Length: 372
Image 1 (cartoon, one colour):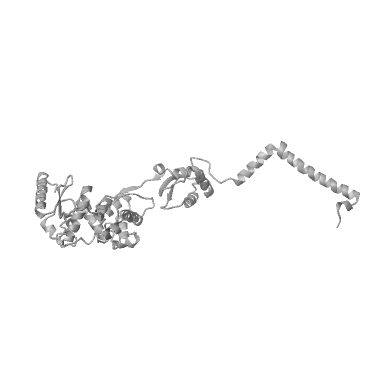
Image 2: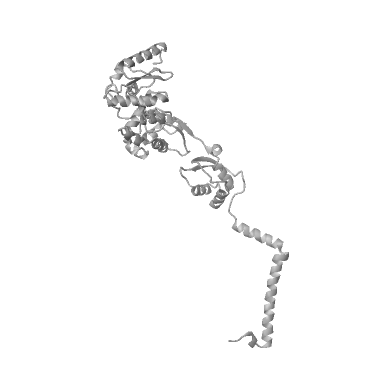
């Protein structure tokens, strides 16, 4: 093994010279970068920055109109992917960066949004988090107390989806998300409420929204638990709620009406509700019924048959469901609306008291021809 000291003088000089030139080259390079190479370094840093930057569009106005639909429960990651596929944003990385810059955690509601192609990610996110301005609203209103056939008619008109498609969907109740205890009968379980529909809504998806809303309300008021406390099934409570919805207008009277129904059931008395006769004969519009109508043999006729009808007679709202699940305390056995216009209702304990209240109702009808 040899060392530098062992080399001949000429070789040592050559080696030293080479090392000197190498050091000089390094010093020159440093001088360029640190001392006089500002312009060159500035250009180089730009190249590096461009190589590492996030692909994003820059035109705030975008290029063309496009609709983007955010499904229920979609994550921000999946929303970003959808935006890229629709060419709204240039990359998921740009969308993620926009989320990081957002003040707080962005919340994006389900629905369809008016967007533009080739938007900066921050602009796209702003649209998604401003639903009052950019979400497409296709809203329908379903009123309380409608029968299933009436709901289908309203849905067909408001959604422009043919009634036949709703009828076909209703024949597959297992696809609708009904409660397990609903006996696969949709009547009474398409919850009356306001609904916003997406552009790609189908008859099945609309009905699913309505049954999902029923399930939410059922959970909120603990319908199964309250039914158990009343020694009833949840289905029976929904039937009672549908009767209350059809019979009683004023919210304060509904828990009382529920108590009357339960008291009469406990005593084995027929309910004798005109609303059940109207349902049985498929009629609307009148407060009273005729003797012939009350003689109907339909199982829904509570003048002829004791106990509850076999199913709901309409779709009860939340107030009626709450009343049926939480009846007032009392010993009433009768009620009558003595003023159908205002909904004023009298609750009584005895037949004599009830007959006196019925007389007041008849007097009102005499004074308001055609209203009863």
